Length: 405
Ligand SMILES: Cc1cc2nc3c(=O)[nH]c(=O)nc-3n(C[C@H](O)[C@H](O)[C@H](O)COP(=O)(O)OP(=O)(O)OC[C@H]3O[C@@H](n4cnc5c(N)ncnc54)[C@H](O)[C@@H]3O)c2cc1C
Image (cartoon, rainbow, N blue to C red; front, side):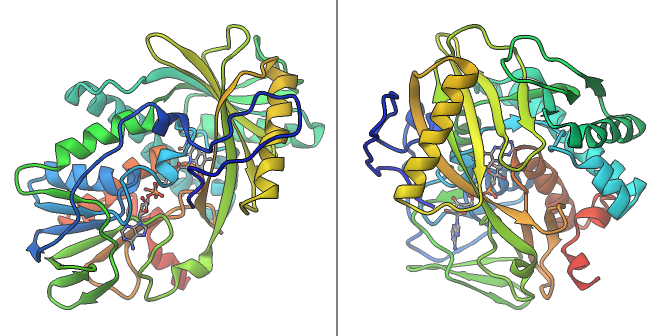
């Protein structure tokens, strides 16, 4: 969804910027990769230049394969350029649900794989020496509703049994919210997603691997090799990864198990010192917030989920509501950036990562359920292993084959 460049005025006395643009895009340069003009053969074509596509390309390239990433617009300007970028394995309330619906072993895979993702991200930041405003911080799922307190306690108990870094707390110093209880996960983190991903893109785009922008995939023809058709040229590859958030090529209709969910976000200057921690409420419309800082400046990133992402009046009203909540809870009206974005949700709350149903050499990663910062690393690792024919136990949880259950 494109919101950049829309201009609105607000009747109330809050200092809200007129233009929609994420802090991540406003504080990094625009990219300028060429469009694909000539036919090309590589080992793997990755379609989509967000965090799922770029991480997959980076992992595959590091295993010696030649990659072409094609992006219909500019890389990291879709959902990944408009996220809140909390890096956590605490995905709201997820583990008690997974244990009940998928069993203990699969809840364990979910926890292990997302915890692995957090350490893998830190390993890559260190190995590649990437300046991306990464900080470690605990992550909280909180409630101020007595009705949700048991779910919080159940989540802590389940997560502890799975060996995850979970504890129960009934107060959080330094934030102005009535909290009855919260799940706390330690050793989580947050970062600047574009600073990280633009460097990853530079590392991909060399030694016989490429990034092409303004190059939409129009169709895929599958036989022994796959043909990916774009407006001016065709790519030939053994394997194709579809990382377009909502799959554009979908022979067995994964989309019937998916839905879109939108959120609005603002970045404000905090009025006082904010705890080094990240938060999300248990209720669908509760706020999600985290700090962001670099060497010079500090911000608070605050988001609120809305199922409906229409342009115009609703966007104005939703941002205005978020600004009022920010003023009420964080005593600041210094809002510097506002934006909106949508992510793809899977109806069973588990991402679809693996071989595309009905395909031999086409793979997909979708349905990240607003937790793509870790699940994109999970998908990059799992898809790399599948493409190389290596065993990965995570497949049993994430496989898109469960469509046929
Ligand atoms: C407001 C908001 C806040 C969030 N906060 C968090 C958070 O704190 N922590 C967390 O873990 N997750 C968070 N998420 C979720 C996370 O941001 C997403 O799951 C993740 O960014 C999705 O990445 P992606 O690569 O799948 O999609 P995208 O970043 O959208 O990338 C897909 C790309 O594919 C391209 N494309 C589409 N069709 C084609 C085609 N035919 N040919 C070529 N290219 C194509 C698009 O242009 C796009 O650039 C949040 C999501 C939202 C909306």
